[in-house]
Amino acid sequence: MAFLLEAYNGILQRLAGSGTTLVAVSKTKPEADIMEAYGAGQRDFGENYVQELVGKQASLPEDIRWHFIGHLQKNKVKYIAPFVHLVHGVDSISLLQEIQKQGVKHNRIIDCLLQVHIASEETKFGFDDAELDACIKIIQASPGSFDHVQIRGLMGMASFSDDQLLLAREFNHLHALFQKYANLPVWNGRFTVLSMGMSSDYALAISCGSNMVRIGSLIFGEREKRTA
Image (cartoon, rainbow, N blue to C red; front, side, top):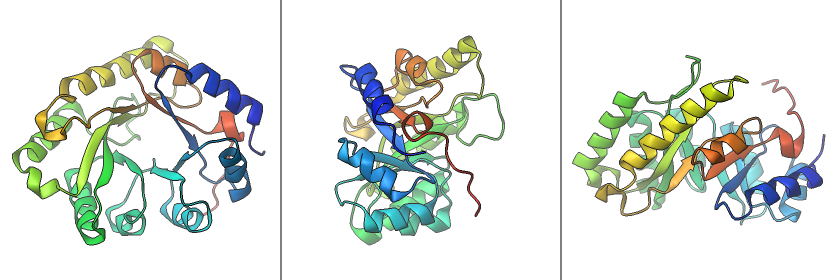
């Protein structure tokens, strides 16, 4: 399945005027499909696997903004630190400390989102509310220890469900947390991103306050199963 231009343009029309950033989820997709989307004007792409992202970044246009949207292991941060545009899934202080370390090493400030566990499934990653609060308090207490990371906002994944009321509750909860923390002085006015919503639920997510959506299958078709 290749890049679906008509579907892509339809999504852009739905997002028009909402101030919502579309991240095209290109994990497992060939570079040719990404280049078709690039030719249509898309610049923000999301990847889940470090090795795949590193390979694509090396061979695709330099002005692509690469988002890492998967679960990031600490020992893999070093591979994407030189170029990653936004890390969506920071789910521990220790991971944030490693990103800080690599930011110092590469002399760049790395933009990150704190991932919050809002879904009913225990398999999804992220801070619970108390852990999120504790993480933010640590950053507030020692901002100099995190001077090479910039927390840009929050990210969450809703339950895998058709229950619109359940999904809305989860999205609204994350939006409330976003509003609670958005204006802290430690962020220097840059805590502005609420990343929630995917192919199946992005319209609902936007209605609940999302301003960044991660869409793959609607743009590229159903993804191939990863074999390694």
